[in-house]
Figure (cartoon, rainbow, N blue to C red):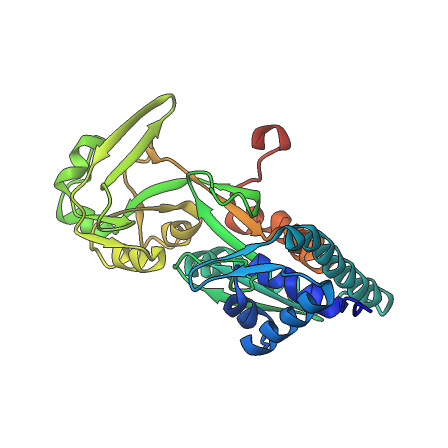
Amino acid sequence: MRTALDLNDLRLLSYVVDCGGFSAASRVLAIPTSTISQRIASLERAAGMGLLRRSTRSLSLTDAGKLMVPHARAIEEQVRDLQQSLQCLSGKPNGAIRVVSSSEIVQFALAPVLAKFSEQYPDIAIHIDATSRRVDLIGEGYDVGIREHRASLKDSTLLQRVVARTPWSLAAAPAYLQAQAAPNEPSELANYDVLYFGDPKEEHTWDLQRGNCALKVELKPSICCNDMGALSIAAINGAGIVGLPAYIIEPSLKRGQLVPVLPEWRPIGSCISIITPPRRQSSRLIKCFTDFVAAELPIATDCVGGLTNSERN
């Protein structure tokens, strides 16, 4: 007589597949890889056939595995929904959410939002990883990613929700502009010290706009950096002209530490998006957090709100 399928093992199978392997699932679940391997082997014995094809470099599903995984995911979602429904019965939502974002978004945009969120939802713990590296949201077990970007995010396995559109500005320290006259035209920027956000290996240009007029300016940056906060500090200390999101440099403009440069010309703006793995989207806890961020982030950054449904499509 064939052994009944263990629902816990089915849940493990969904994690192994969604995380892309046993090691990644082990990190997410904090369960030894050997234990997960043993439980999947037990599930295969109960099913009477193999579910996964394993090699040193890849993992794929057998026909039986392809049949089983949607049911395994459904079980995981139902368990999560049940847990959160029980939490709702006990009062305010509670639990922990793992969030990853860039250090500049965390520092300049998200921090005041988190303060409000924690005041309203004291029983929800937010664990934040502030990093500039590109993370594997699913494989590393994050619930939510918050990213700033210009081009569309290409990962089709993740769900993207644009929550703010952020204008950019050019600015420099008053002392720097006293040492040499401020530029009058974008073409003159090549003669100035430019603080450039981006990869030193990429093309160094600013796409500037003035009304319906747009042009691309080639630059020779004196400093390239992938940390906006560091560039802002460098600009305040007179290192040159910087182009950054308005929510980062606006406080320094108000304090007089920076002044606008070519104020009629603006670099092309960017968007801030909330990214979630598909399996997290139905979570009431995650929805509570993402809805709050979507409403509050544009206010905290003094940015335009998210795109409408017609603009997204």
